[in-house]
Length: 215
Ligand code: GAR
Image 1 (cartoon, rainbow, N blue to C red):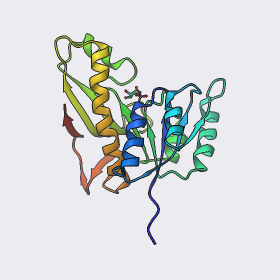
Image 2 (cartoon, helix red, strand yellow; image 1 turned 45 degrees about the vertical axis):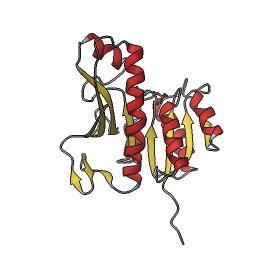
Image 3 (spheres, rainbow, N blue to C red; image 1 turned 90 degrees about the vertical axis):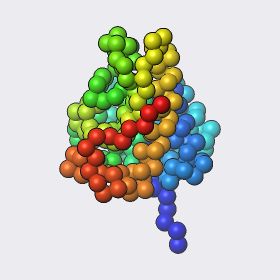
Image 4 (cartoon, rainbow, N blue to C red; image 1 turned 45 degrees about the horizontal axis):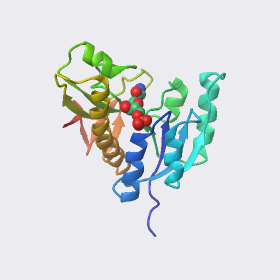
């Protein structure tokens, strides 16, 4: 009897281009996992349409006017219907409570549009440009209680060009995000990537820095 594929839940808030990269990898058979559900905190998120188009359960869980803890409890109940092995935050613009993170300890990956630890938070492309950075990119990291500070697994780096704008950097970083996010998920569900005592382990070895892909 063949073992069921690992199950991934993807959390989004908007466009869902990273979700699309995951859906494409799943349907091409290169993700090594089934996308069991897509959850958005915004009803109008285009990513929900992308999920439905791919035949994946698409659920809206609105978060206005309820406490963070109440939201996270509702989210955990929703997710429990799908028994995910991994949660992937792909442009999910909410912050979790510590108890939610503890519940899924070592099983939440996030993609962030900067070379963490540089530029946690919002508006990363603008801030990198304003600071005159030579390098910029994106990071896949494990989610821990401190925002955008969990151990990094994989980074995509690109050289900032003289004429780059927020728009051009956004587009260039997106190309890289769509490479590294499916890769990290594939590593995780394949048992190659894990979090152990706050360290990232790849193929049984502790990473002293994230794996780096360059444009
Ligand atoms: C991505 O660039 C992702 O790195 C960023 O949101 C975008 C979502 O794009 N995430 C964060 O800023 C998280 N703090 P998408 O909806 O097209 O995948």
